[in-house]
Amino acid sequence: MSEALLLRSDSQGICTLTLNRSDAYNALSMELMQAISTELDQIKDDIEVRTVIIKGGGKGFCAGHDLKQMMDAGEEAYYQSTFETCSEMMQRIINLPIPVIAQVHGVATAAGCQLVASCDMAVCADNARFATPGVNIGLFCSTPMVALTRALAPKHAMELLLTGDLMSAERATEIGLVNWSVAAAKLDQLTLELAEKIASKSRKTLSIGKQAFYQQTQQPLSDAYQYCSKVMTDNMMENDAQEGIDAFIGKRKPVWSHR
Image (cartoon, rainbow, N blue to C red; front, side, top):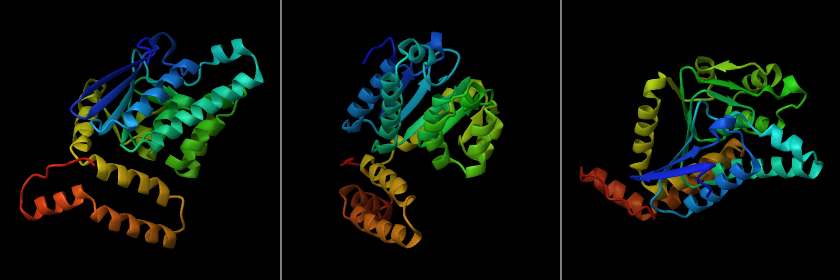
């Protein structure tokens, strides 16, 4: 990991990844996307980490792709590589076996908005703004559309994609792009409290639940119930489920093995 691009700090089961290109509003250069992917791969197998927070340094969360870098390259193969690298990074977030929370301040635009939509939960400052403005410059935000259409109702996704307008934190919360909008001064505190609550759970249980959540959303109703019934049966056989149920019955605090 290059500290010039991405910062990592770990505390009590919470890993915070901070995008660190503040001079470019944390635009997703090829190098930054690769650094994020590398870090997510390491977190995947780190049993000490139970929740991830992704935030931006400086004045904003993320302004999307580094268009200057792309235009300087000026080659179709580089464009393709950029979008594929980004798509793989976003899928790593979905496939990570623990929850990922976006902490948003300032702007989250284009691929930055995609990053918010790809995270499992999101908290934003009440002065944050969201947009997929590609349509304004002749480049439709097609890869951000993948995340948005899975996180939002179709007409809400189209609202962002077709207008290209900046959306307020209030509206983003209303349509479900983010979970909570809070005063900027309280953003760190609320995000940390949410992360601490999640990190107090069994990592194994979080992993089972997150994987099942995304899997069942792609299935017909009857198939989803059949699949999730099997998931719960298997979950019941896990050590942490046995410990949690025994602790509940015994009115004590569970001691998780996280395995």
